[in-house]
Structure formats: C-alpha cells, structure tokens
Image (cartoon, rainbow, N blue to C red):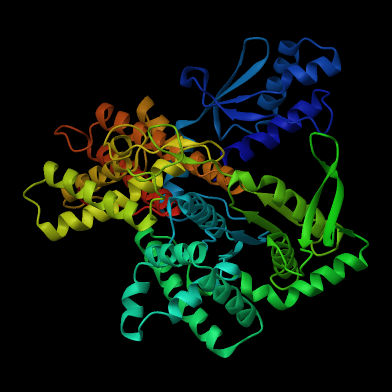
Amino acid sequence: MNIIQQLDQPISQAMQQAGAPDNAPAVIKPSNRPEFGDYQANGIMGVAKQLKMNPRELATTVVEILEKSGDLAEIVEKIEIAGPGFINIHLSNDWLAQQAKNVLNNKTDQVDKAQQPQTIVVDYSGPNLAKEMHVGHLRSTIIGDAVARVLSFQGHNVIRQNHVGDWGTQFGMLIAHMIDQPDSELGLQLSDLETFYREAKIRFDEDETFAESARNYVVKLQAGDEECLTHWQQFIEISLQHCEDVYSKLNVLLSRADVKPESSYNDELPVVISDLDKAGLLTEDNGAKCVFLEEFKGKDDSILPAIVQKSDGGYLYATTDLAALKYRQHALKASRMLYFVDARQNLHLKQVFSISKKAGFVNEDTSLEHMAFGTMMGNDGKPFKTRVGGTTKLVDLLTEAEQRAFDLVSEKNPTLDVTERKTIANIVGMGAVKYADLSKNRTSDYIFNWDTMLSFEGNTAPYLQYAYARISSIFRKVENYNAQADVIINEPAEHQLALKLLQFSDAIQSVAKDGMPNFLCNYLFELAGNFMTFYEACPILKEGVAVEVKESRLQLAQLTANTLKTGLDLLGIETLERM
C-alpha cells in the first residue's frame, strides 16, 4: 500500500498534458501541516521555469486536468493550490477507511512486496574470533540485522554473511598459550576469552621465547599441521559459541550457517593475485604487490596503493575482501551487496569495490554499498569505554541493560512475579539498547545514555512497547466485537491515524533503499503518538459510544497494534502484552 505511488502516476500524467517534459516528476511528499492536506505535489516551480510559465498558472492547469480525468476521484477528497504553485492533496475519509479495512481483511498488503526480488548479500557483525565481542560490534550487528529483516520482509532473497576474523598471527599466539595450559583447566580458561587473549598477548610482548614459539605455530597452522588445526578449531568453536550467545540475547538472526570466515578464502588468495596480474592491475612496490588506481589520491596528489600481498608473501584484508566479493558475485549470484562496516573503513572498501569491478570479480551492474556507521560514545563524548578505560565486552553491557530494566520494572510493578519481571526486563532491556542505536542516523556518532534509552517517554523502545501493551489492554476489556464491521472515519484524529497506518510501506521502502533503520523508528514513534491522540479524542469503550463507532475504532486500534508489532519485529525488538 504505497500511497505516494498511487498519487504520483496520475499527477505526473496531468503535468505532461499541461506541457511538462515526459521525465518531469510530480515529487509527492507527505505534508508537514495537516491543515494543508495529507500530501503535497512539488516540482511545479521547476517545470514552470522550463516552460516559462507562471507556476500557479501551471498548477491550476494540472488540477483542472486531474478533475476532468477523474483519475483521483476515488482517492482524493479535494485538491487545492497554495502559495506560488504547490498542490495540496486531501485524501478521502471513505477511501482511507476502505484501505484500512482491506489491510485488516488481508485483501491488500500493508507493505508492498518487491516487484523484482533481488539476491542481496548483507555483510554484518564480523567479529574477530581472537577475543569476545565488544561494544564496537554492536552497531554493525543490530543495524545490519534490521536492514536484512526489512529486505526479507519485502520478498528479496537475503543472504547473511558473517565475515569473522579467524586467521592470522594472533592465532599462533593463542595456540601457544592453549598448549601451555593443563588439559583440566583449559575449558575454564577459555570461558573468558577476553582474559585468555590478554594473558597470551602479555606473554607474547614480554617473553621472546614464547613469541618465537607463537610465530612458529602460525607457520604450522598455515601449513595445515594437524595438532595446530585441532587447537585452532577448538578455539574457534568456543569463540563462535560466545558470539551466538550474544546474538541470542540480542534477538539477532545470525546463525552458524551464516558464518563465512576469513580462513574459508585461503585457497583463493593466490588466485586473486594471479587474476589481478592477468588484468594488468598489479604493480610491485618495494617487494609488495599493489594496485594503484587513479581515483584514489592522497593530499599530495600521489596515488594511494591498495596492498594485496606483502613483500614476505603474506596476504592482507584487501586480498580476502576481494576473494569474498568474487565468491558473493559468482557463487551466491548477488545483484546487490551491503557492507555494514565502520565509517573508518571507507577508503578501504572504496578501493576493493573499485578493484573488484576492474578485475571482473564483480559485474558492472552489481550494486556495492558501504553502509557506514558512526561511533557509540560515552557521556564524555569519547568512544564508549569501561569505568577504568578498557573496552567493554558486549555481553557485560547487555547484562547491565537487563539489570537496569529489572530494577525499573520492579519499581513500577513490585507485585509482579519475579519470573515475569525478569522476562519483561530482558525484552525491555534488549529493546532499549537496540532502539537507542537504531533510532539514530546510521552515519552519525551518538551518546550512549542509560537514563534516556530506558525512559518510558520520548522516542524509545519502552515507550513503543508500552504503547503496544496499552492497546492490548483495551482488547482484554472487550468481551467480543464484530471484526467484520465497516471502518468508519469521521474525526480528524481517526483520519490522521488511518493515514499514518497506510504510510507503513513508505517507511519500509526508505529503510530498504538507504539502509537507515531510523526511518522506521521515526515512523513507529509518530504512529504511537497518533494513536495516543486518537485514543484521547475518540473514546472507544466509553459509555454512550455507538456500537458501529466502537467497532470501527477497535479495528483501527487492532491495525495499530499489528503495525507496531511488525515494525518492532523488523527492528529485532520484541513486544509485550503486559508491562
């Protein structure tokens, strides 16, 4: 149900009949001022300038053509011209009511499905398995997951790829440290990967004998030594389990099947180098093999190299990323690839994207998109750290969120059973952390603040979860009602709520196009606000309300609850029937 598309075609056609070029868009946008209408058709001024016409005169001609054609008669109550030539569109109450009813009866999809479904690879999370996930992994994980959910919801074939770091020098260090542990203690030691990694790193930095042993284990590992591979696999298994525990806690849909680690591309790396050479892209520089592209220059106007093989024969992230791009194009058949990676990797990804197309690893028409994101900051305006200045383990942050939510729930509902309070605390705590991030512009840094994110007021998950629970409580008071009755819209608050409900598809489309979950968050927040206004202005269960009005309003309430639940689910946030 995309209202903008339904308005755009007849208005664009009317503009063309009035003399506008065939490619002149109507530019339909929701109105910021309800008194001016529900939508506004812009673009008149630009076309009028081309035609050397008065904009208001052109707008008048367009409206006259629309009124004669009757193309919008069923949808629109009235069309007005405002200002220098804006066309304000007021939608019909009867049409809004029928569309809402069609959605409730499943006669119309509330969200338009993709007309040409794509195979879309979404690269997100990607932790380094040498240690546990930390807060720096939060944004990639939850933003990528939300966008992947939205794309799947539209009907695209979404392939999640968790490009975990499971190879490199640090694993020789970890294997050496593992081998030195008594078998009876190793499992306990590995239960805290962060401490285990820190101990190994200290030994590597301070003990040259240990460091030499670690470097030897790297060589053995890369050569396929059976003992090294066994220890490495044991470490990887435990590391992945730590990740999966975090994903489960966060309600993130990544599974073991989505893991495509760096090591899986090992055999392909020499082929990548060979293919780059055949394509005439390789240049040797001080023994290293590099790709120099004219479009990537530094401040001194010198070309910035993309190093794909070090002078000692070792490969780099760029080599592995090129192998991954090749795999995703030719094996997975992707037509669009989204990379949810820190903004600081912008140059790196631009280089590998460009190289992959020049080398023929990726088709020219395949869309490669870096969905960059900013940094989660502490109250001091610096990257989020522990109180002692260390990196915060993600699982510790989530545990604190649950505890804070439990304290809040206990304060508000002390008579609730402890088990129920814990369930609510888990859902509210995880939702609060995720929504606080997802509701911000993806490309911006943001301040992590416990008090704000756990508030039941403002644009927060608890506010939306409470809005859903409040609607659920209405239906617990209703013994029965006729869900097949007509939806009737007479009051302005009913009109605004129905209109907002039918704009859900627009919000979903925006997220899918730009990878910005905050568009959906803002929509849900506005929807909850519209419902609160509707609930106050339009009594539902109050004595004296006519039966047909009550049943109509209950249906609008039901559609609101459905939309809130669906929208929050697409963000990976659960709802509650009671709070």
